[in-house]
Length: 317
Image 1 (spheres, rainbow, N blue to C red):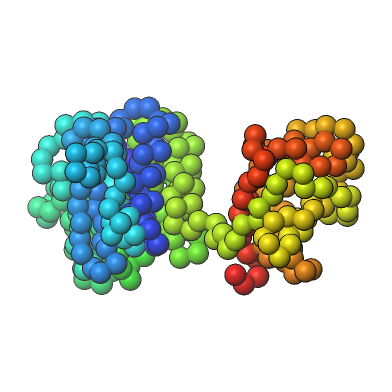
Image 2 (cartoon, rainbow, N blue to C red):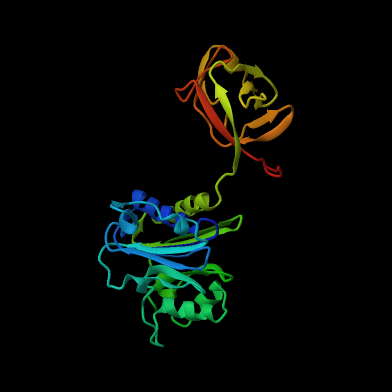
């Protein structure tokens, strides 16, 4: 009956928001109702947002407009989390997501607000462990391991404390769980959910979406490819660029594309872009092309397209 998403790293706020929005578009079940969101901004402020109905579509507003993305300071926040499910949960909704700007965030799924034997909600207890200096993983274990029958799975993260997720023993026995995590170039994401389908493949999809926001392909330039650009046969594919930034010719190792008319990928994803024999980068976009008699006729129905490229691994920008 819930999904919890946590992210630490560049643009974590936007990554969490977009992951939730993606879940609402593709999943069915306990989704699209209440949402409690929190972020720790780059200047150390705690920012919260919440809604009882509509999920990401009503979580943020701009004037009279709903369904907008987080404001820039929240989108760029290095720590963010959300918990969401069906509509109309008990107030205050902040009880479902424990947060302290100096310590971190604790979200999760099932019932993170469950009161433990010490009188504290288990998410608040994890936050207290982190306040005492415990890393996220250790804080989760310290709270959930002695409470195997608590109905909660938690995600903890914070400055200097890392990010981790853990289900109680009771929750691990459920047949409807989804979970995934990933890390890349200083960005990390954890997701837990239940009562939302697809069960096995939703969380990995959302992790990839979130990491794509946090660690986007670093485009360092673009080459203009125009109709009329010639194709020449070579040992490998390349786009050869002139001083004006436009492709002078495209090298291909597909001899068939030099004869007749073809709908093909004349500039496939990852094609090297070179100028004066120097590698500028690899293309990060693949236009749909039509070629005829060794010349480009159109690119995605247009006569010219700016094809972005990013630095190749090991290459500077």
